[in-house]
Image (tube, rainbow, N blue to C red; front, side):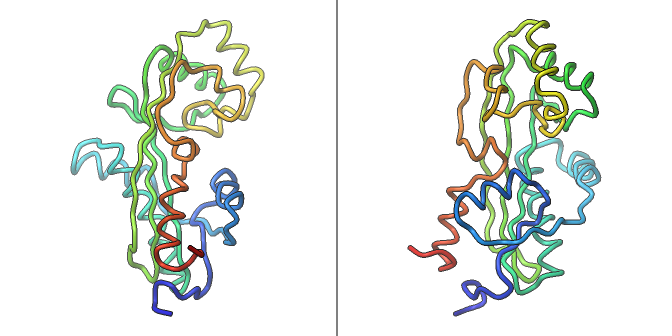
Length: 206
């Protein structure tokens, strides 16, 4: 086997995310997790000052930074880096700091369409081998304040774990009137392109 297809030290997900790990585990992949040491806000500020705010390019840049950080420390492993950014009206949104911030974010997003940009990267030995960028468009319905309050109460701390204050696999689906895009992209890791790449390099069986 060559340097790409050799299993080396295995597959690593450069993230502590339980959600992304569940996606890979559900697909039958064997891997371990190792958090990347990346200052996401600093990279975001740097990208904004250099190129203007392009959420897609930034999501891919962050995914690459995570994969490269871990692959330098684990040079024999195949490392997956992933990142997702939410943009609405030219503004980036991050995970809310508390329930009140979550309510405010919902108020800003309701009745509008926002974009989820999911960047994905595979690296080995400190070099990027493959990258992929995907986008999903989600439109929130114009729900009432009462619904938003009830929703935040029912979801409680769960809403703070998502940049969009929702989980489409749960009650959060009730916030939406339309969704365009791949389910796994919305979940934060475009799975099908990754599986296709792993088959192409011989990591997974054809």
